[in-house]
Length: 73
Image (cartoon, rainbow, N blue to C red; front, top):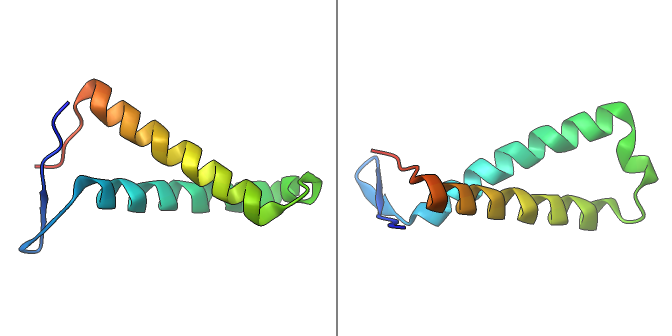
C-alpha cells in the first residue's frame, strides 16, 4: 500500500483529496437516483443518511485503492 502525491496542474495534492472528490461525485449520483425513485422519503434523517452513504463510498474507494493499487499517473 503506497499512496503518493498526485500532480494536479502543477500542484501536488494528497491522494485522499482525489478520493474524496470521487466519492462525492458517486454520492451525488446515488442521491439523485434515490431522490428520483423516492427512496429518501422513507429515511428518518435524509442528510444523515447521505453523509453515511458518503462515508461508505469513501472508505470503499480507499480500501479498493489500497488493495488493488489504483493510482493516477
